[in-house]
Length: 253
Image (cartoon, rainbow, N blue to C red; front, side):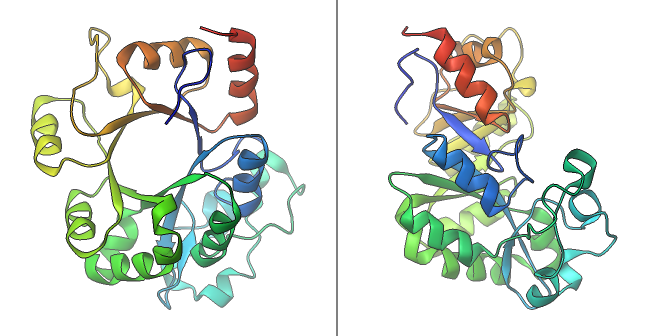
């Protein structure tokens, strides 16, 4: 990750340009890339027929105002469900659907110098088991593996991915504390992700290690500067356009 000329960490589009488009859709991801970002992040769940699809939640309440669980639907059934996020966008995106991971991988292969952080969701791991979920995701990602980093909150899944694939891995930690640091040292992932709110205010620098740090969810320039001071290599934001404008206004370092 190359720092912006302002000295601030590069932006990672959290679920794509999710401020302007329904999150985790191909439209949101493509928008982030079109705006110039070279790092995107999105989430993956499995459908009933074991097809990896790009969704954060295990149910469709928030994105489609429907009660079904994605794990209970086939990929064909899910393809008929608009993921409009009507609470935010009304009927503006009535034709938008949750893409399959395969469709997003096709786009990744067309994007120039874009790294995709693909989060394996724990709900799918619980429902279908680690081996089945990781095998299916790894198989779909394989053509674009050099452009991808597989990330998760789930530590065992990262160990399995490291032992069975050539994928780069990233651990999303839930607590910034000494036990977690010891586990990070043992795993030695390529990336560590953490919510900025979890980092104590007294922290001067993030833990050193062989990994790169990515902090989320960043919404303003002051938080981005805090991340830079901590030594972050990237920052995740859903507010892509606003953060790009803030970076531009910040000027050179």
